[in-house]
Length: 167
Image 1: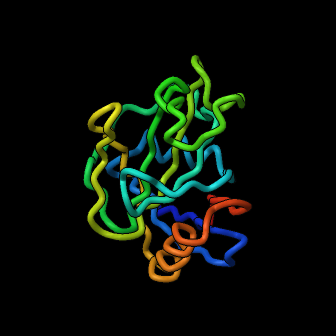
Image 2: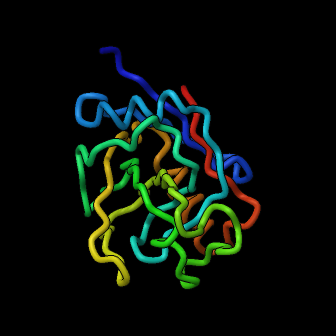
């Protein structure tokens, strides 16, 4: 199979990076994401996992991918896929608007995340270990994206989005 690439951007900050899909390690997840592109949503910076930015989406795959190529210790440049239900994210401590349609009991949400620095651990005080599917790796522009993600952490995410599109 020919290698496939996507661009990930923080449009308001004018920064993007390019990632290679890991079709050999996470073929079902890569196919699901690829077919759904382009995707864009409000960006969030992780509270618990440390150096992570992510966006939440309505499910887009006919069936949620199996836990292929899992990790609980993502490294810089990893793209991870998570599936949550609204009840799991309904705790007000997470900072979501729980009155909206996204984060409610019965809803399923897909979390597409970019890890931009070291020392990440996918454990949550309410739910325990949260393994993610590693489906891509950044091959270009990680330093610039990491600086923008750190700015997002310090200056705030309001008004910014995280976008994924085919390269």
